[in-house]
Amino acid sequence: MGWIIECRANVSSHRPPEEGASNRLRWIPSAISGLRIALLPVIGFAWMQGKSTATLLLYGLVVLSDWLDGRLARRWRVASRWGAYMDAVADMVVTIGLLGVLAFNGALPTWVPGVPCVVAVMFFATSPRGNLRYDWLGKYYGAYLYVMVGVLLFGASAFVSQGLTLVLFVLSMAVLANRLASGRGTSA
Image 1: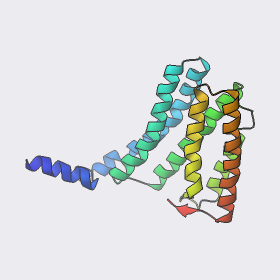
Image 2: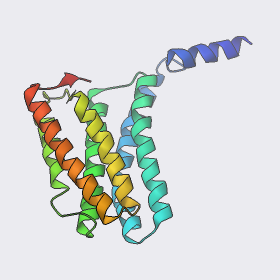
Image 3: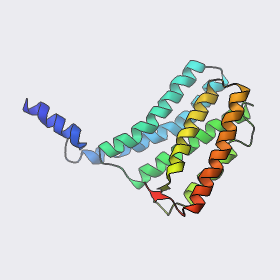
Image 4: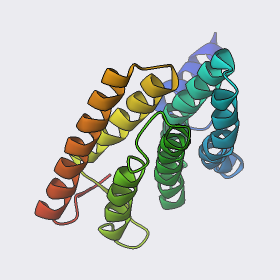
């Protein structure tokens, strides 16, 4: 009985179960972010080969890993600047990379991946060294990119593709304007 209560206390307080565990666990969230980047060519290849089940499973793993890495870092109290940077880079590389795969194969106009590239450059350029700054609209932008890529990977019609592209362009301009107007955003 005492062991169950102790385990529940550890889970509810989000502390590592033993002293020194945080050093052993520190690398796991960043490795999960790195896994997202490593899966990019695999997803692109599966999509180009018409392997929709594999594409769905792999893309689902990428989306799940985006949630999981931050959750684990906070739960284990191993969040770091490096981890936050790695997470942001992984998000941008994966979404922009998959937009590039879609554009390369004619599912999107070739200029579309360049739009979130500009937003990514602005994000890093307006974040002080080593301290990423987020704004509220940028968080929604990242979620939109994941949804857009997911919809496009699974066979959106030309009409839906054009609509998603238009929303991406408008949202990108809003994110850039908001970033410029607010200075540097807010700390995460």
